[in-house]
Image 1 (cartoon, rainbow, N blue to C red):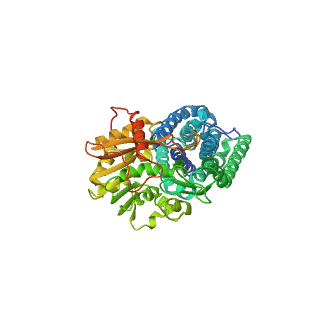
Image 2 (image 1 turned 60 degrees about the horizontal axis):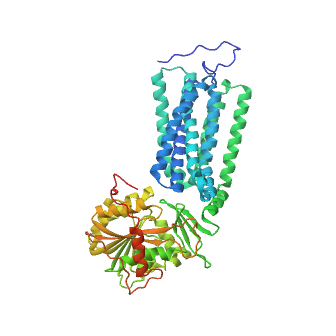
Image 3 (image 1 turned 30 degrees about the vertical axis):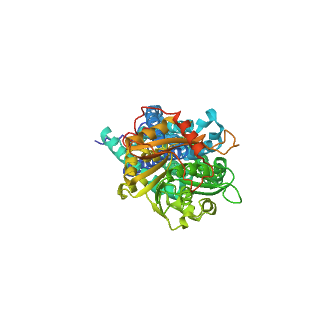
Length: 539
């Protein structure tokens, strides 16, 4: 039920709790407030998704990062709603201040997170937790400001035309939810592909600032003193200048931050629909380093050691037909193709950009020996789990799982009992599966959970570990694991023997070293661990 306010007497000062003196008709004013609710909700959800996405790229473990962001933001929104009650007598001024601060904090959050990750994460100690601490701080600050928006907007819309509470709440939340829908869809389909993380966040802050400033300084300017109007205008222009300057400098900033993370030899940096791919070195005699989402995937000085350890034991037996799950960089395929007994190699890679670089980039193509030019190699661009569901049974002698670490949320399903069950189905009698299961030394529980999961899928596994750096490299070399843990598995209850094919000698492995590597892995064994499944991941 609508209850119009009585007009204020002539010459009375502006009322901050009574009816607003609008420059437009009440119906138009109400529509403008709801439009601002829509824009603010869209921007708020973009800030939330941007924090989750960016920290997932930088830190990993999407589930944990999403849980931290969502729980802290929802908690902070409740506190912000309570705090907004203190601004009721200065609603327009309070809302303008909230939107100005939210545009600054939310718009600059991605750049600040990237800066802390780039310049402090490698320092070690407490500094290594800088990105996580800043994530919590931004989630708290943005949540407080978003939580203050709705109570203030509710007061503003009631200042235009008094309504019963249920009707006002329904209108306000309808606009809020529709705005959240638009923001949620705009983030993955517009902002990320066309603007990227940094510029997308800055653009969102700009839209947020303009919407809030236009509402307060345009529609509710008579509720503000002259001093308050000028203060909000100058603060808004300052924040707008900061956001615009950051957008202009974002390319240079990203280049400098990338050098801080990856070194000065970065040649290629591209974000696909799957991940960020960065290539450093690989030309002029420099070793090639491949980074995927900020994590060192291929260390040029240790690549041969890793891929020999992954591939050579699996090829000590029938190996005419080989399946490589992942490995789009072609380096595992290069090791497989050294054996002339291999007649066909199928590579199932999710990221087409990585596979394209493996064909065309001079450094990466030289490192993989131009394997994609070999007629025995066949590339399939697909998710490994989905592809295995339709693959013909008993069709491969060897399966090489060269996949993201189990600790990364996106890769957890590729270390599940269901995944290994499907892999077991495509193995021919006497076939073998080679799995990289992470570092035995630093993450033994993850390693032995993979072993337990293989066993639950009907595969018996032989563990072994290989040192993760060349002799003479410094013990604290950044980005390099202390060791690599592998599991060589086969269907049945008998674990396959760990040996090398004498027809193709390995450059870095010997039978004696493999035996020692197996004993070293066995000494870390953890019994009684449950298997990881799609429904109940254990990593």
